[in-house]
Length: 344
Image (cartoon, rainbow, N blue to C red):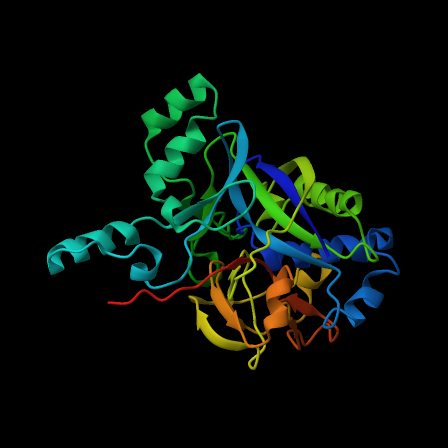
């Protein structure tokens, strides 16, 4: 599979985070309406998805320009803090303060070569300043006046359902409620890393599908104007190679096969999926919950051959009662790393 970077620019708030498995699901709906996006059509590709994925999407990560070169902010690997940055020699208090400082840095900067360097951990304020520095001066001034200081701001959005008989809100289904929306600083660009099987599709077709998603709206409350984005660039990348790699770092939610691991370091997340498009109004639009490893997981595969592939995980089937052949992306693009356990 070949690796590409597709750059998105959000045009407003997102009701659903741009996660890899969710991007895959919406791309499948695009392919369902436009069979030309996938060679042989969607059903043919899904039939062999468990053995040969036609595309694997990463989640969207902030994209920066540092010293004239692209860089990316991804999630800090879910490893013990002392493995990421060994505490210096000193008192127990000094070691604990050091680990506390590391814990407050949830981001890891990647250079253009996508090699993992644990010395480049960063906190929210530092990443926010880097992102804001790329915005026009007037935008910087307004953002600093507004405060926030986080690269992704999540806020509750109030909603009302009006009872047409009383022309007001009320109880039960007419009670006001809130839903989370996610904002990035103005002008921020996001990078999605996409692995493509060239026999099934190509960059132009995937870019077309993403562009349509951005115009009509991605995820929750797209009909209210959320989830708009623009595709502003795309290019091929060389997957990083590491001769002495013994572990893999994930760039999207992942579901590994039960016997595929010898060690795993991850934060679990549960995807309470829901059908989109015309199945969103079906008798049962809800999918079965899927337990996934959140992005930033580190896996030590049982098969050394897995270290040579740019993806890891498996297809997740049996997630829908309304659509028997529906699958979820349990695959994730991965970066190789050398995992060493510090002594002492």
